[in-house]
Each structure stands twice: as structure tokens, then as C-alpha cells.
Image (cartoon, rainbow, N blue to C red; front, side):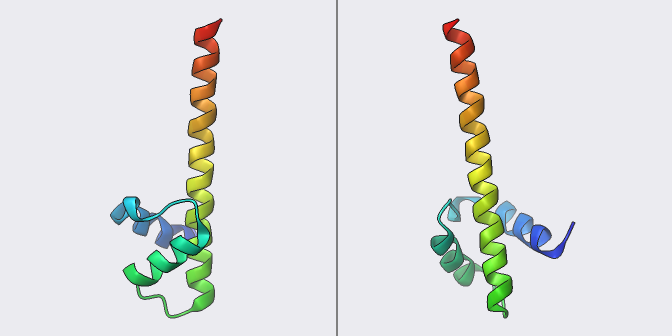
Length: 73
């Protein structure tokens, strides 16, 4: 597991309610929660968290749609 994924996972485990699917909001939240000296590293972590949460919400939505579709048949 690379550094970005590891750090992002640790932060999401500790503060899952603070992050959402908006990159700029995640970047600001990350700035308040953690000390990341590099702007590039902070942006990559915020980007990974954003992509992860978007992917998770998309998968959850498609799973619910599949369940609803099977119920109607």
C-alpha cells in the first residue's frame, strides 16, 4: 500500500464524518486536522479521499438500485 492510500485510510478511520465528495472542502478539512507540510501531498491525499468516497457512494447507489429492481420484478 503506498503512502497516499495509507495516510488517507488512517485519516478516514479517525475522522469519517468530516469528509465528503467535495475536493476543496476535503482539502480545507485536511488542513485543519493534520499537519501536511507539502502542498502536493495534501492535495493528493484530499484527492484520494474524494475519489474513494465518490466511488463508495456510487457503489452503494448501484447496489440499492439493483435491490430495488429485483424487488419490482
